[in-house]
Image (tube, rainbow, N blue to C red; front, side, top):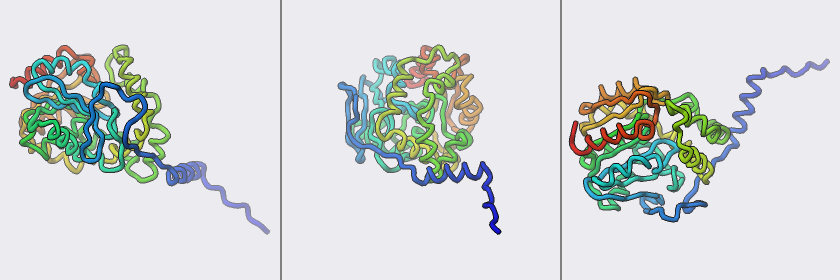
Length: 306
């Protein structure tokens, strides 16, 4: 007499299949030039990474750091307002924009070391660091590691707390599972995700959507994005934010659903020398949706006003 094999539950079978795929998954990194590079881009080789940067203007130095899955182009409406009074150094962080996507450490601390190396290569000893979203975690890591090089901080809708991480990012920490998730889902619906980050989806610049979609298609992008997510170990560092004494301006969209205002209210309490400015009818990109008001506030702050 034979017994029919016991059937595995459907959910268990699906999970086993996913884990099998995850174990086989591989995301490739990339070094060197990429198709379609802008002809007028400037490059530096620092710490084994080919970095795209922009260095314009004259005056006290300001370093601009973009957010996750973004690039220098995030600051298109900010740079012209700054360069008449400041030297502006904008950087495509490792893994994003046109900068290399090598293997290695993509944590905020590692990115901050790369920023410091670019500053040194450009002859800048100290700067105000202006950052957006995840770039704010790099800015805070920079202030912690190089306090003497940090004159001021200005953070737009900062992404700097463990509690801000979505479940997908938490799951992606597991080897194999992260590769599967980013292989399958990372590049989906870029336009829809950007629309959710704006109070008024009609204000999403078409150029921004196109920049994000093109960047996602570049070699090594998914691998680099996954390593950046794995580097978001904010629970290990967020307790030290209270030790940062640099004057800090927090600029926040009141209707931001990506980094809700409650996190700005938390951060302004924890940073000992910070002020929070909130923009109504504005989502995750005040430098776009509230460009005139936020540029005025930023210029006044960088000029010495509290």
